[in-house]
Length: 222
Length: 222
Image (tube, rainbow over all chains, first blue to last red; front, side, top):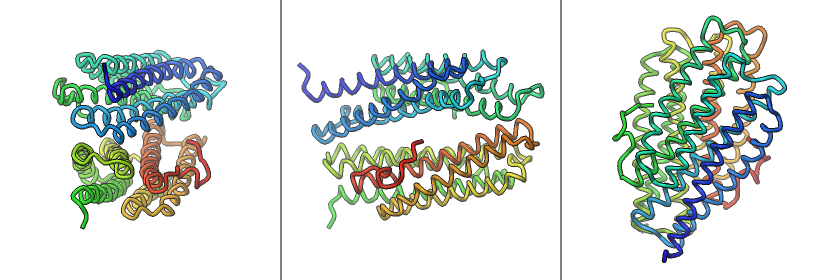
């Protein structure tokens, strides 16, 4: 029978998994809202981010209470501290999904993304959601091999991000400055979302193995 | 005579002050490098950010060691956890200064910032450095009134950021897409740098007063 401490630790872990699934889904819905110029969907994503923020504050308070009450040491201590960092990564990811939705809302009823970039943005949005779904899985299972797959997915996101920039800088760009600015920011939101998903997964790897993920995979200095 | 625990806590606090001063200065130098197209200055900023990262890792290790060895409770516990969060804000701020310098390096020998935006970018860079210098002072003195001043400075940064965007979207914009993209990212780096400086100062306010800074100042939902 697990003691109260480990039950609470498990509960915090479960909530982190749920949080990762929520922000991954939020980014998927935000992507749909911006590609379809769907105002009500965008507004729901923006509103729902409050819950993510509340969950993060709640998780932090519980982690700190655990530190105070149970005064864990060694692995248990590292687990609690890691949970704090992961919840910060996930909260920031939720903010980035909200930024995508806010951009959709800002440009409504126009589409923020021109048709010739629709496919690239869709790919980035889907990749971001898949990445975060993997992070959720890593949080649930502590599967280090799955966590290391995320490094490749992160490279794929960088490739898409670069393709987006190349398209922007192309002489044939015909969509003007406002759209160029929007697409620049959009690319950055997806790229940072991916960074946070990978960061959260790397923390799990470090917790489980004591090694940094970069020591397993090819070092890809950011 | 202070015990070993409180001496170590003070030492961590001192290092956070030093870290804030360092990243504030880095952003100042990065701004100079991008406005002057100064490649060697940019490269020094980029290189120096490794020290910031190392300092953060060191601070984290020491904070965790404190939690493990001394098992603090109540205020001391909150202080250690707050230090962890502040060091993360400051490390991210260092990265943002590095991004500014990298943009300078990328466009060298061209100037990334067109002359008609020189004054605005200079103002944003100087404001960012002043903001972080205040954060350093808040960390050193725990002065809540000074921390609350940062809220106004943050508003000033938002105003400058909006002015930058208005200039970009102006029909008379004549600098093309690449420069529009660069200026968009640059504006975001300064804005996020300011966010982290304010975030760090708010954490000190919460630690000292138990209240959120937003309850003192006008709420300015981001």
